[in-house]
Length: 505
Image (cartoon, rainbow, N blue to C red; front, side):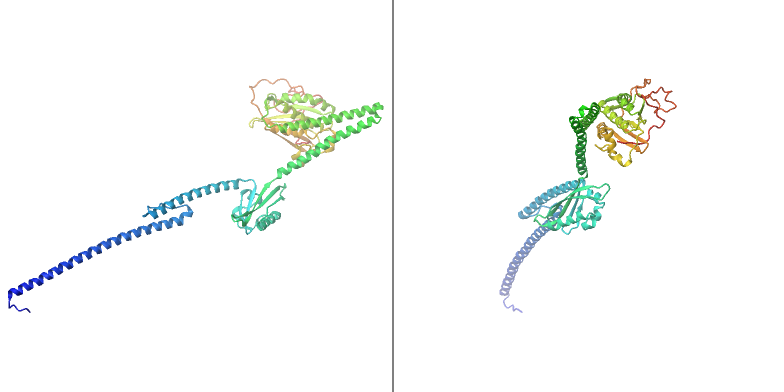
C-alpha cells in the first residue's frame, strides 16, 4: 500500500506507470495483429496449395483411368489439366487415344474383311493351335466334315476329322513345321477328290504356333482329266478302226484281189463305207469342237416346229424305208419356238438318225410335240420301239463316245458323238435334252426349247408331206383317217399313247 505523503509526486509516478503499461499493451497488440494476419495468409496459401494439389491429384486420377482404358479404345473426355506439363501429357494422351482408335477401327475393318473371306471361301479351312486342337473352322469345312464350329473348336483334330490321313498330316505339320501337299479321296458316294495344302503358322518371333489346312475340291478337275483321257483314247480308237480296215483292204487289192471283179467290187464297197464312217467321225468332231468353242449368243429366229420336222423327215425317210421302219409325225401347226434353224435341224437329224439306227426292222419311230404354254416351253419327243436301255446308263447317255452296246453301235455306223452334239445344241439354246427308257419296249428322247409368241389364230393348213396335222394331239387309230392325217411312206398311225418311256444311244 502506498503512502501518500506527497500526493503530487505520487500522482505523477502513477501516471508514468499507466503510460508505460499502455505503451506495452499497444506494442503487444501490434505483434498480435501481425501474427494473426500472418496466420490468415498462411492458411490462405495452404488452402490454395491444397486446392492445387487436389486438382493435380484429380487430373492424375483421370489420366490413370484414361491409361487403363486406352487398350479398349474408350478414352474418356479429359478436363483441362493445370500446369504446362500436365497439359502436355493430356494432349499427348488424347493424340495417342485418337491414333489407337484409328488403329482399332482399321483392325476391325481388316478383321471383318478377313472374316468375310474366311466364311465365304468355297475351300475348307481348318486352323490348329500348337497343342493340335482346332482353333478355327470355316463353314465349308463344317459342311465337308458335317460338324459345327461351336462344337469342335478346342477339340483335338483326330476327334473331329474322320479322315485319318488328313488328321495325321496336320499333326505332323504342327509338330515339325514343314508344309505338306497331298491328295485325298472321300468315301462318299459319289467319291470326291480334294487337294490338301497344309502349312505351319508361326508367331512374329518365328515360333511354331500351329498349322492351317486348306482343302480344295478337285473332283471336277479329275473328272475332266478322266474325260480327256477317255476322249483321246476313243478318238484314237475310232480313227484307227476305219483306217486299219481301209489299209488292210487296199493291201489285199494290191496283192492281186483286183483281178477278181466280184471281190474287187465288194472290197471297194467296204472301203467306201469305211471312208464315209471316217468322214462322219471327222465331221462330228468338227461340229462338237465348233459348238464348244462358241461362247457368244446364238442367233435365233422364230421357227415353226412342224415345218422343221417335215424337212428332217424328208432326209431320214430313205434310211427308215431301207430298214423297214415306220415313221410318223403328230404335231399341231403354228407351234413356234425360238431357235437357230441350222442347229435345230442338226439336233432333230441326230435324234431321228439315232432312233432309226437302233430300232429293229419293222419297228416304229414317231415324233410328238407338246406345247407347255404356261411355262413358255415346247417339248419335241422322238419315240421308238427299239430295245431300250438300262437306267444305269442314262446319266452318261449324252457324253461323248459313250455307247451302251459298243459292238452294235459300230455295226450301225454310229460315231458316239451324235447325242453329245444334241446336248450342246440344247444348252446353247437355253434348253435341255433328256432320255427315258424301258428295256424291251422302247425309248423317248425329249428336246425342250423356249416357245415363241404365237401369231393370231388362222385355219389349219394341210398336213406336211411326212406327218399329219393333229389339232387335238397325237393321232389315234380311230381318228387318224377322219383328221386327214397321212403318215410317211411305209408308216402307220400311232396309238393314243404312242410313247413308251425309254431311251438309248
